[in-house]
Image 1 (tube, rainbow, N blue to C red):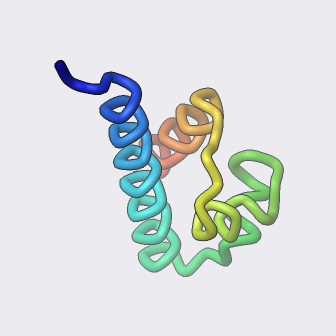
Image 2 (image 1 turned 30 degrees about the horizontal axis):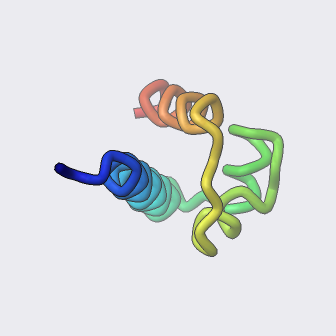
Image 3 (image 1 turned 60 degrees about the vertical axis):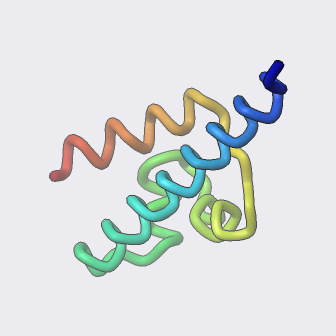
Length: 73
C-alpha cells in the first residue's frame, strides 16, 4: 500500500518547482525584476524571493500566477 500523503506532498513540491521555473523563465525573457513581478501579480514584492527559498504558495496564488503568465504570453 502506497503512502498517499507522501505522493500528494511530492506532487505539490513538483508543482512548486515547476511554478518557480516558469516564473524564472518569464523574468529572464521579459527582463522584469522579481520584485516588480511579485508586486504586479500577487501584491507581494518578496513573492519570487520567497518561492526561491521554498515558500508553499496557496492554490489560489498559484492560479493567479498561472493566469497572469498565460495572459502575457
